[in-house]
Amino acid sequence: MAPMTAPEPGSTPTPIWNVATPRARSGRALDRERITTTAIGLADAEGLEAVTMRRLAAELGSSPMSLYRHVPGGKVDLTDLMHDALMGEHDLAGIPSGDVAADLGRLGTERRTAAHRHPWSIQPTARPMLGPYGIRRLDTALSIFDERVTPERRGWAIGLLDAYVSGAVGQELAQHNEELRSGLSAEDWQHAVAPYMTQMLATGDYPHLADYTASAPAIDLDQQFADGLGAVIAGILAAIDS
Image (tube, rainbow, N blue to C red; front, top):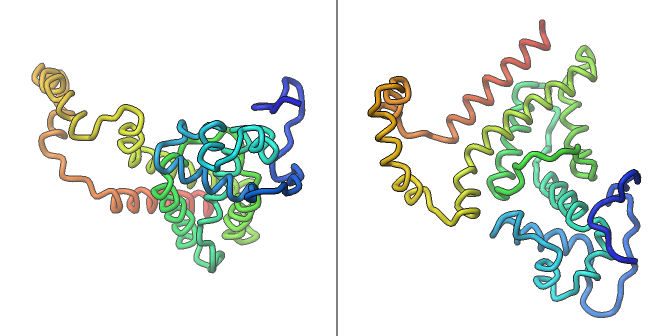
């Protein structure tokens, strides 16, 4: 049977974690953990677009058909495995601590730290993480709140926190990912657009942007993230207490 890269229309997809692991064959062992680890390394170095089944097979010294035995859904399954493996890097020890604000802060900073190690991973996913690490992280996050907070409200709070982290870190890593895509460094891009921006600001039509450009201090990304995270957490706590 030919390997599938996506479920057939109208079919019910099966999460990769619920697909039986194939029996080992002779030769160098090939398993999902090794496949996933190699794919993550390739994505870290060259971006998620570089991870194709053919390229990954070459990196593993295998064949694409052999990979499909382990990840029958192709890159769809592979990306799920990769994202879930990264969830396993989050340090959740000690959560819940009884300090809701501190625990929410931990969740946010752990996700940011993992994303900076793996810049491709901050791209939003269309489906919730159903792998074992993703489920553990979500269950731990929901446990932060006491019984006075409804399950619906808990889910809203975690979703809002994650949305902030995804947006903020996505901006932080935009330049890195753009360099992978275009090959232009930040300095190259700034040099290319400088004449255009100078011309636009000289029209006087954008006085607020001109003031900002002239006076904006150097951005401390760590402090900017921490300030934004604190504001989001304060808003969550105020909404829950209201």
